[in-house]
Length: 133
Image 1 (cartoon, rainbow, N blue to C red):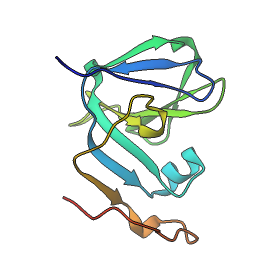
Image 2 (image 1 turned 180 degrees about the vertical axis):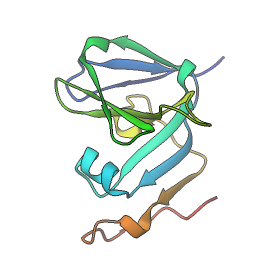
Image 3 (image 1 turned 90 degrees about the vertical axis):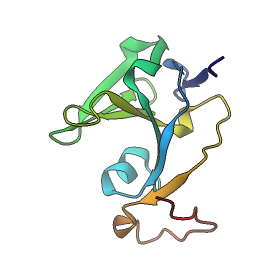
């Protein structure tokens, strides 16, 4: 039986389920992810778009095209960053989930930090994740 992961935004206006385990877990330090999350980095895991089901509050999800090929989705009520995806190209049928919005415990098998060249100048890793390819 497939494990179902549940998640929601800060105000719980938006809730969702994942019918697949998130893969390609990354902690992105690019400036867009830092600004979108208001933190040193953003943590995401990806699933096929068909594995994401919005359970409640789809009317509260707003989109923002942060580049020509990337669309970010967030809750219009509380501002929680929820998902991002490519609007075209090889991975257009996948969606990346902001892992901080998961309500179901999740421990990835592999994870890595990316775009460290763009890391916030004030970011000092306490116990960094190993670089895994």
